[in-house]
Amino acid sequence: MRRFFFAILQALQAVRAFKLRAAFCISSVALGISAITVIVAATEGAYRKAYEMVDRFGPDAMLVLGGSEEARAIGRRDKTITVGDVEALRQAFPTAYLLVPMSSVREVNVSYGNRRHQTRVTGTTEGYSRSWSWPVVDGRDLTEADVKGARNVALIGAQVVREIFPDTDPIGKFLFVRNLAVRVVGVLEERGTTGAGHNLDDRIVMPITTVMKKLMNEKTYVNAVRIRFMDVRNMARHREEVRAFLRDRHQLKPGQPDDFRLLSSEEIIRFLVALTGSLVIFIGITGVMSLVVAGFVLANLFLLSVNERIPEIGIRRAVGARRRDILFQFLFEATALTLAGGVLGFGLGVAAGPLLKFVADFPIYFSWKAFAVGLALSSLVGLIFGLQPARRAAAIHPIQAIRNG
Image 1 (cartoon, helix red, strand yellow):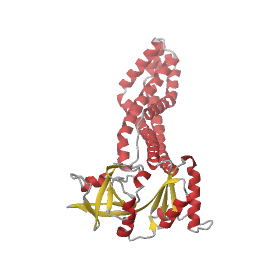
Image 2 (image 1 turned 90 degrees about the horizontal axis):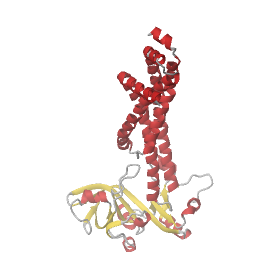
Image 3 (image 1 turned 135 degrees about the vertical axis):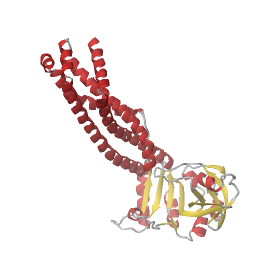
């Protein structure tokens, strides 16, 4: 036991004696560990975000979007879902307890007094807040009478309240949506931003009849339909049934691509996993390369250190140190340096996390898992790349070492 603690003491003294060399080893390891730390944190954050989004989207929900995949990929918003499709879906799927059509207009100018703002206006029915589990926290919800009568009423998001009514209770007030005077009847609960950085609270929700007639001059097409089913376990089957039903209604022949898109919680998870995978591959390659480079730097510096410390090794062997004592001392030195680099790398990763979140708007979540992975990898680098120099030091013959010294 005394030999063990003496070897540790000798190793720590050697680290203190070669401060510049130690700093170089620590910094090279820290760069690689910081990248690995960000990978683990980004993966953890992405999975948490995925489950949060699935919970918000609804595991029993499906969104039918107008336009094909190809059209949406190039930014074209084709109109393919009709009001007739909505009613036909309602009749064909009795297990759908909510079926809510939606039509949106982007970048609409709204004003109240001398305050101006540009926001999204969504036209929908009285089931909108229920379909998104998005409660009205002040005032009332839209009603069936609002929709049937195409009334000029609206629910507003928290961001619109901040922009248009910062010091005023909005309920009952009239704001202008373009040139249309609209009475605010309710305020939606604050939701924050999506994974893509869109502010969910920056919106106005109005009866779909009002939006289509008075803002869009549209009678036939809607942008999307939100459907929620009673039986969550059969969502995959419902998806295929809705797809087949719409293909039949749109008279699409076998081999023709869908002229609509179906989005469910499974697609959200797949998208985030794919996004995380790309990030993991990119940063992972960088991190592994950094660790390999750090390992070679460590090995070369320790080989140089062995040559410089031959007299010290010879004296220690002459006074009774065994080969395994020398081996342990050098391995402990290498591992201590890489562990210090691991701790520093974790700190750098934590510091870089908010920057990545700000630049790429990517969810980052640091946990003890990231810290443990960083320490494990840094220890592994020390053991693997410190082994050869340690074995060389342990193999030095004491008489030859003293003579050469």
